[in-house]
Image (tube, rainbow, N blue to C red; front, side, top):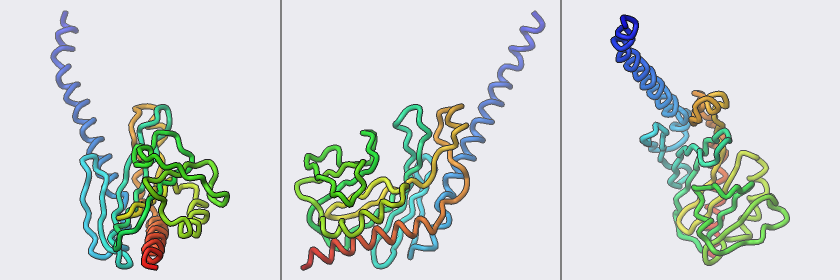
Length: 222
C-alpha cells in the first residue's frame, strides 16, 4: 500500500518531467529548422525571412531582377520511407508567358506539392529528358524549345525532383536533405540534421530557375 501511495504521489512529477522534455525537444527541433536556410539570406537582395508554424523558414528577396522565394517542405506522405525535405525555389514572372509544364522524375503518385495531377494534358517525354518521369500540362504546353535546352542538364543532379512552369511563375523542387533514419524508425517523425543547407547548391538552383524563366519570357516576346 505504501509503495502504491508513493507511486501515485510521484506520478504527476514523472508526467510533468516527460512533458517538459518533450517540449524542450520540440523547441530544439524548431530552432534547428529555423536555421536551415541561414546561409541563403545574403545571396538575395532585400531578403525577408518568415517562419511556418512548424518552424521551417521562408525567405523572399530579389535575385537578378526577379522575385525569388525559398521554402522547405517535409514529405511525410509515403509511409515506411525516410522523409525527404524538399527545397522549393520559386521565381515570380516578370512577364506572363503561355502554357504550363509539370515535369516530375521518379513519380510515386504521392507528390502532394504538384498541381499536375489535376491537369488533363499528358506530354510525351522527349528522348533526351529523364525517362522514368511524367510530364503534364494544363491547356497548352510551355515552350518545349526552351525546356529542351535546360531539362537534360538540370536533371543530371539526381536531387532535382520537379520543374514546374506556369504562366506567372517557375519552380524547381530539390531534395535538400533526408530525415534522420534512426529518429524516423523510432518516432516516425520528420527530423533533419541541424546543418544549414549548402548555399552553393541553393544558388545553383536559383540560377537555373531564373535562366529558364528568362528564356521563356524572352521567347514569348518574339
